[in-house]
Structure formats: C-alpha cells, structure tokens
Length: 142
Image 1 (cartoon, rainbow, N blue to C red):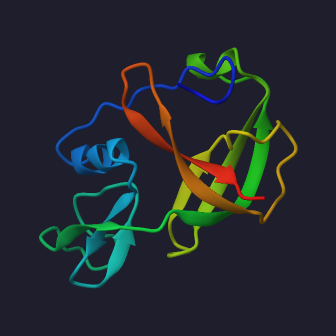
Image 2: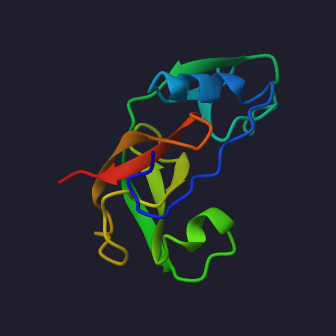
Image 3: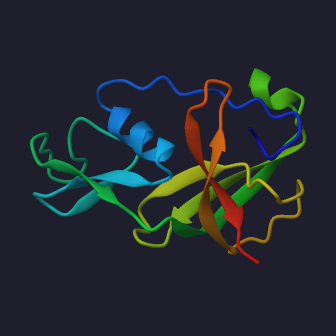
C-alpha cells in the first residue's frame, strides 16, 4: 500500500480510453499516447491529438519515467477525503524529462512535507490503491 502513513489513495476508474494506461501501471510501466501523425506525446489520454486534431493516429508508447520537480506546495487542508489523515502533504508538478510538455502531479512519497528540493530529479515509482490497482507516483532521486 501507500508509503505515506494515513494516505488512502483513490483508485482510478478506467474507461475505454484510459484502460491501456492503467494496465501498463499494473505492469510497472509508464505508457503515454503518441500521435504518429505529428509525433506528439499526450497525457492524460485524449480522444484527439491536441496538436494536429487526429483521432486515428494514436499508439501507446513506453517512456522512461524520469523527470524533475517544476513547482510544489504543501496542502494542509485538503478537500480530498483520502488525503485528510495524511496532511500536511506535498503536491508537486513533475515535468517529464523525455518531453517537457508533459506534466504529472505527485505527493512525492518519501519526501517530508515542505522539504521538497525545487528542480530536483525524480523517478517513477508505483503505489497500490485499496483496490490493488497500481498508480504512478514520483520520488526524489538523491
């Protein structure tokens, strides 16, 4: 389960569009949609390419899972029920090194609240939800 005491991770509800993403997470892999018409990565999954508009040219592409912290804040009064008992909690925007146009959100497991090194490198990890579904998270690399 979670590496942050008290954190109850909400389980995603996959749909036809997102199922391949969540299946890959269960295999401890990070895959993103790639538009083969214009070679643009997409996250979160979309029905059409944001750049060229194609809806027919998507394939799933595995990415390395390395990035860096762009910005962060500490949440002390979350409205998200599963986060309340774990507060205060980090909330960071992670930029994917492989494509700086792709951003993820993370609570940075293993990093004490407020002790986030801005710009620090992070790597992909997977955390388990109460349903057993793995979700992607990011951890500071020392």
